[in-house]
Amino acid sequence: MKTKATNAQIAANESDDETTKEEYQQEAAKFTNQANDKIVEIANVFERANASEYKENQNNISALMKAASNKNTDNNFVMAEMMNDEAVELFNEAIVARQNAVTEPNFNTKQALLTEAKNKENEAIKKQQNAIGLLEQIAPDASTTLATNQTSSTTNNESSASNTNT
Image (cartoon, rainbow, N blue to C red; front, top):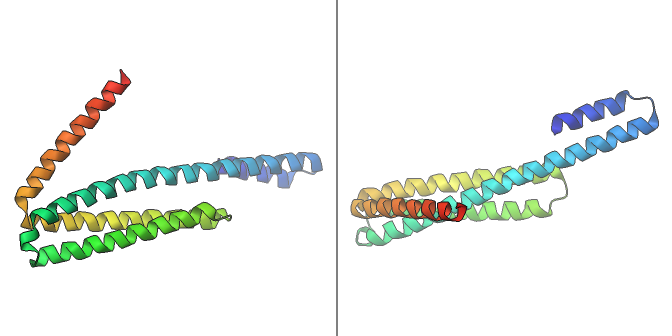
């Protein structure tokens, strides 16, 4: 789309006929808008995927913290708690960046906000994964239970998806 927009703008700049020039400029604007819409669409896909992973990680962290609550003075527990707090803060910052992007009229600024949000979400998820790793070290039985539950949850989701496709 961006290439089509650029080509149309080049054709407009090279045209001596004002009517043709205007047609090419309108075409370039149309392609630019379509490309921008696709960029926002892709950002929304990342938002949904990251939100889903974040939520699943939060559930896992809660379960692991509950299972390891008798070890809440362990350094790994304390570090996991801190990482989770940082993850929550980062994810909240990402939410604010996405909300600001929605109302931002300038596309370049909107795109920068969406990129910032995606990066903060990814950083939050990475911190969650590190927290999960630390908690699994002090609550190995709970991590085995989580793995089993995730496997059965995935199997249930796959079977319900295939049921809706038949």
